Length: 295
Image 1 (cartoon, helix red, strand yellow):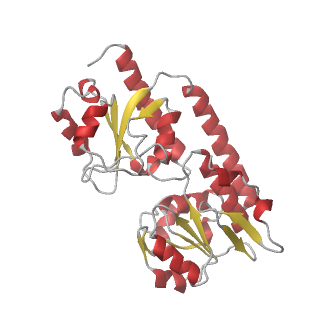
Image 2 (spheres, rainbow, N blue to C red):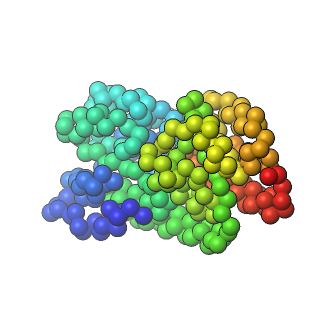
């Protein structure tokens, strides 16, 4: 869990105000619980609904489509190019942003114009529960947020206990094909990979979402390749393209999988649904290896 998530709310409390520390280590303070919210990431929208604040969202970015009620929320642009004027017109009490996904200059502009911006960046599975608790404080839904966080943490512990001590499996997670993108060891997806007892073959790269070459993937010799599906892309073809290298262990053992990107690439409540699916295919790859399948 990020260190800043361990800081108690009282550490940033100010008289007669609601204050929490966000994932940019900044104090976000409100005079009263937020009634008008703008969400600048699909995962933030999902968290707000999970803590009972969904009906207060007056604006959200494209692809904020879960739960279904979120589809009716007015749009304020894409996560990487928001409409600042439209957000200002909505008069939000709080903007929930995505630190690594939103345009940093645009977030700075919102703050300069007087809006409260909570920058969110979960890097570990437990951070999602911590985010829920902090947003619960800012929205006055602390009891619902605490209940959600407790359920989430309990389910996470059960998964962690189930897959603890399993033999590691080398895994390549493909986010995009052109350019070929993956995640490093600091990304939330890599934490899910660790939960399943697998090893991200590109964990040591410095960039959070690094660009890699086909040659680097071949040299890493992953035993399983997983691509995230969705956003209208033909990602089956991404996996089929790897069959050009039959000596690659993942290809030789037929361990190429397409999983719902919304469950793994959104930093929200459904990440544990994605974890269950990823762990299931990792376990299958582990069994195939034990039987001596492929190279």
